Amino acid sequence: MNPTRRLAIAALATLPMGARAQGAAPAWPVRPVKILVGFPPGQSSDIVARAYADELAKLYGQPFVVENRPGAGATIAAGLGARAAPDGYTVHFGTSGNLAVAPNLYPNLTYDPLKDFEFVTLVGRSPLVLVVRADSPITSLGSLIASSKTSALNYGSGGNGVVNHLAMELLKRASGARLNHVPYKGSSPALTDLLGGSIDVMFDTTTVTFPLVRQGRLRALAVTSASRMEQMPEVPAVAETVAGFEAVTWGMFTLPRGTPGAIVDSLALRMSEVMRQPAVKEKLAELGTYVTPESSPAHAKAWAEAEFQKWGRIIRDADVRIG
Image (cartoon, rainbow, N blue to C red):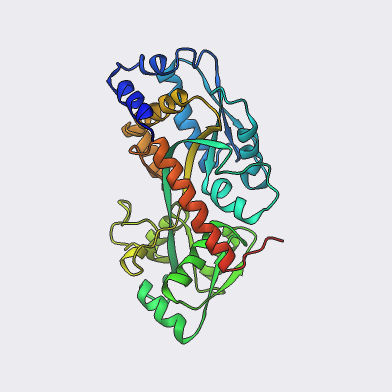
């Protein structure tokens, strides 16, 4: 971040609430702000975006309106966000899927995630959980890796190129485990086959797996966050066995490239305020998402670039193809 921008952010932080946005960008916002979401109403990304929209509307005194534009793995919404006027009135709620994974899978997208956006803030990270059947002889990640080297195991995913597929490919390369991919048309049928004994292991979301673990139907071997989760502190992180491992889905607010820096910084500051609200933190925790109030535009950009490179390497190394 350049010195001028650092000074601008520092000055913003000293202003009273309600004056920061005006001091940063006197003409913004003076009308409703649109937030593009690439998923239908009711899905996790939509719930997260609406939680922020409601609080931002209170802070700025202008409506923040979620517009759902689902389709093509959320890349339609990303394309619209990239091509919007850079005036601060179109915000895009991006995800690991449409900002880091899809651009490495589809060569003809209408946007370049690293060139077409101003990154505002990383709003949250959502880990996956490595699970086996409750009656599986595999009782830990270490025993999974050891068992796979004796006889290859089958793992399920929601399809080629989805995050629970790529996370397992990352684990294979980091640990040397022998795991055969069995893709499904969605995670639900994969989970059904895991419970039925047709496959041995899979990654899935906390909201899906933790209830089944508590019911005694699944065994959680590890979580993919860098450290253990508050929801189930007895479940180790993969990183405790495979050093440096982290594989999470995430959400991030972006603006079109060329949006004035004062607007980017103002919105990032307000987002940080929202993330510190206990009610927001609790609501997102219910979705298995942990907020990152320390995130800044520079942090968000660095995170997106690193994730783009990480998943790109896995996609190339595993020769992941769609169709």
